[in-house]
Image 1 (cartoon, rainbow, N blue to C red):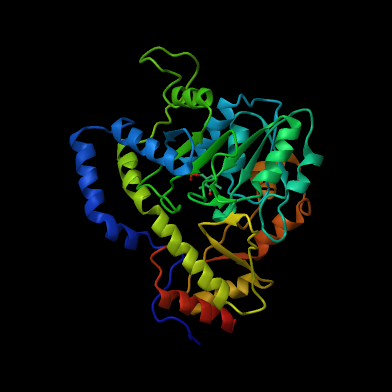
Image 2: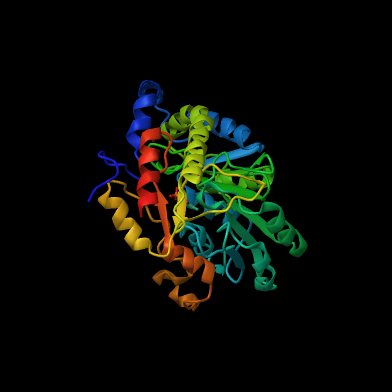
Length: 370
Ligand SMILES: *Cc1c(COP(=O)(O)O)cnc(C)c1O
């Protein structure tokens, strides 16, 4: 029965990476603790400076997670009740939450059937006088068509926000994602390409006004201690996460390169005609947060891989517009055929920088036998 790998090949293994940088991380932990720099502070500021430089933006504001980063982006842009915000139907649900948090209405848009990214040609017919912004998602680590989406936003005088939670280091036409939109939101959830050892996120921007507003909002609406200019939040980044992210940022390009190598091996090695992969346009330089494939008999493939010691992931089984939480919006099955097809046929192959060539080869051989 079992023909593939003898060892289990997981979808993700964070421990291997930790063991590589353990000494550095533990030393940094000790420093943060002895400096009692627990919340915000110099370690967070250092990471913010380095991460902004990495993204090619003027500013980065560290926050307590990626969902918060998106929420703060909505608040900074003044999005509120009665407003509409366009976003892809096929994304992690947090992209939609931020719109709901400010009592605005998420308006979903289908994806392109080949790139699986938000379909820029579907945007204009969704724009109404209430539309205030588009949130594009660099899904699976591959940039969406930033120029095309930005052109629509520009024409209608609405904001563009990039959800780059899966795309640290991805490039569009040779330039890092993060500086096309007014604001770009990152997550440092542990499983992301740049992951904290806990929860963290950031908003990057070239706009000083938005940056300062976000700094204040994350800190109880205050820029001078105990003086509160508006109703704010506690959404600061932990000092520990800042210190650890600063260390990990130095490895990010190398880890992303290895992910790209693995993706290239998958693309070259998988010859099974029952398997389809995400199409990569010429302007996209993806960082492969996930390596997603589709196949007609997804559940069978899932079972077959597991029987052969390969443990895939599934991102995401239900598109946003069909989530129970959003039944109130009134979307029906069939509204977004491409997003719906993807959700019922996708599967995520093992993808992390520490996979060995032998493991990648075993995944390829198993898939080709399906
Ligand atoms: C992970 C993720 C988020 C949310 O980030 P958290 O840090 O988990 O809150 C938002 N959008 C996308 C596309 C994500 O993948």
